[in-house]
Amino acid sequence: MTQRIAHRVVLKNGIVVVAVENPTADIMTARLFVKAGSRCERPDRAGISHLLAAVMTKGTDGLSSMEIAERVESVGASLGAETTSDYFLMSLKTVSADFEDVLSLAGQLLRSPSFPEAEVELEQRSTLQAIRSQKEQPFSMAFSRLREAMYGDRPYARSTLGTEATVASLTRADLLQFHRTYFRPDNLVVSLAGCWDLEAAVAAIERTFGDWEIPDNPIPALDLAPITSRPQITGLPQDTQQSIVMLGYLVPSVLAKSDERVSSEYATLKLLNTYLGNGLSSRLFVELREKRGLAYDVSAFYPTRIDTSQFVVYMGTAPQNTAVAIEGLRVEVERLTALLLTEEELQTAKNKLLGQYALGKQTNSQIAQVLGWYETIGLGIEFDEQFPEAIAAVTAETARRVASRYFIEPYICVVGPASAIGGILPSAVC
Image 1 (tube, helix red, strand yellow):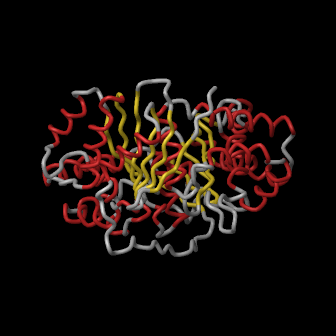
Image 2 (tube, rainbow, N blue to C red):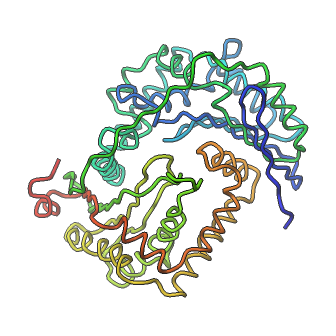
Image 3 (cartoon, rainbow, N blue to C red):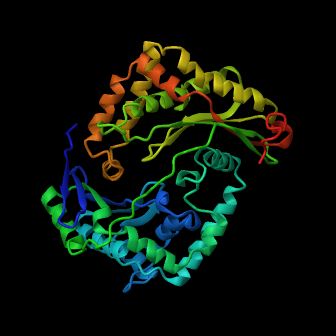
């Protein structure tokens, strides 16, 4: 396979351009990252970045929502926006001949959205319905309660959708203020992948964004209070067919706090996550579902985050097995603090993780997403090569040492029938 070389260029107005030439198909993909996700929201404005993303493509000063849709669909392109905890993202894909026209449209939307009042109200209603729908989903409620217990008042405790109260109170003026604050050239990463060469791609970005000036005011610094919560058991009685059991452990950000650019523990935790909960051959699936028949669903996840992240294992189980499920999950996680993984276990997890990593970078969209994401969260595009090397270097002793540091006492959340959780949470049901 031909090695695809990523190039990084910084424009005069601070825009970072990441470009990869991939001539295998006549397609161009762009990912426009703004370093402003829900972690930048005030508590009383929770959900504003999600609402902004939903309305961003619905109008500019010169184009209506319908006119924007017609311009995109008439050439078979795609254009959309979304938000996450750590960034806002506008995505586009088109054939090469139409790329600059669609990029120009994306530039208008990114720089000068009109946020029509009717569209704002429509998306508010849609978001409120989504929030209410989440309350009917046991998994979503368990994860919400777990985040709140772990993060307290910090942004990662909140859903990117916000709450019913905060979303209902948002106004068009709030959206405009958030946009003026964070949508600026020195807070933007543009990641491109496709059949244009670097010079042509950068020139197209210059024509679209080159006259965008950096405001005089600085980007607001994000001052997050230290996490002060302590591991606890929380629960929520719901009339459900199963209990959802979640155990969470606070673990490091992907970013190192020393001179290293990347946390040395990040790769180890990603590997442990793969070993425990990735797929039908994972430790949790084999031990707790196949051998013991405890689980309807069982897995683990460790999201990559700019700030302190969380390592979560979870299970859906029959209500009468709730207490046994908690014990089973704890035993499997805490086993990693006492026993060394065998060479076969370690190598199998490495092969699985690195294989999935390689398969996740096959299309132009995937390439643009991965490299732009790395640049946006502060890792740099070189992390694409550093990550596989870091995984390969993890030893069984390293895995045990990192597990011993973080897998001590879990935060526990249970959602299920009151009869199943009452004995487990006699005074902690909330």
